[in-house]
Length: 576
Image (cartoon, rainbow, N blue to C red; front, side, top):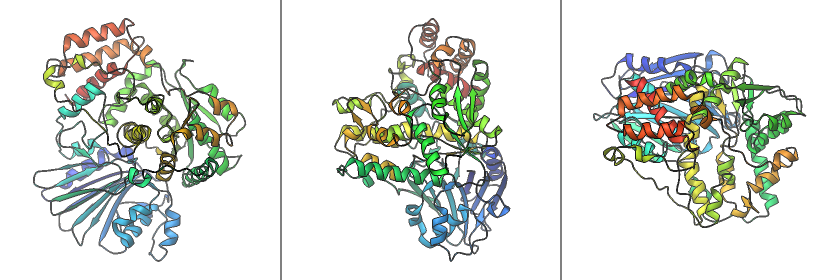
């Protein structure tokens, strides 16, 4: 996992690409490199986090067999060994998956994307055609942002801050901020919180040539799933899904550095641990990392200990205290570039800090199961013929939009996700997978892991698993009130019964208690910073202060809108 950057067109300076590489150093501290095209049409840069083939032959930008192609790549191609066998005639110089990707592109062109199992964002410069080809993995695990000038020049990178470092505008995008503050929505379109800066959506590819950019969708989950349900016996589906899950975990242990596990007490990460045991053997000693806050209402350590009782995995507990939050929040915000998800994201950042300190450069995580198997409570509404209209971060109560000025809130854009299926449940799952929950979580997770130069791998974010799960009828997802029903049947082969039957618990922190308790002064200062810059233009100062005072005094349990104002204050402090 790395950082990539590029500038395509004319009238750019070497200092711009150097600044982009420098500011993404945290994404790849092991090496860096720059390629400048002889024609002056392209510059690409790379920051390397060495995971596979730690030798210098893995450094980038990497050149193909002749002078035609140059590549910079962020991510992992997990099936690179199988592809290497298929492409055995290529004159490999090293053992990296990057070189296999380059070989695949030379042989199959853009069609190589269909061959890849992995997480990726990459740029390939064709020096003969003076053409860029860029692509992002199916669900957008690895990020890619771009800015195109009116003259046609394209600037592209792994993070927004790299585009800013190259001189792109730091002007807030009013529509994105209004939508976020009104509805809690982010990461649901190609727009970002910064004017003119776009994100290439997951499953999309981009070409640039002679100042013209073309974007196409190369992977469509709904199209791959189809409208028909899979009515094969549940036992056959269970066997197929379990086989794919085992393969995905096995592939994600391909690494030349130690691999650890992010373990909560829920069904998903416990299933992941069970699959690790199956693929790596009972004596596997991969370290298991769990965060706690010291509040028994939220901490999941008892369930984790139950799962680890009969294994050899060292259990490493990462405790987050209120005193750490202000400093961590500022650091995490600097790396996110856009609003992030509150204390759970900060606690997650602690896990990666500890993992890096313990030498676990790669962590596995259980993201994706809830969206595949309808794990959230509101999915039940779809089966009852109701709509889950609230799509904000917490699916709780509506955001306090009355604290926004009329003029500003009018810029907010309501969002209705496509409904490609004939049933409400799958349309809701599709919304969460492609537009709301998964894109948001992937941005948060990528930034907190790369903040400390640690790679995150998510075995359940595999397109084959999603396609298989979304073909299943509703009764295999929610049955007799139990969510993720078929997954629970599969997990009985892997987990203690108490873990399988445990009710779903939101992975959370005492955010609402801390913000009105030990973090009250810090939260108030952040809100006042937001008001100092945006009060009277975006925010209704009197209403915001009244709402904050009411919340501080114990009125209400929804802290989401409070965190929005805190986020605005932290970002305002950074760009004042």
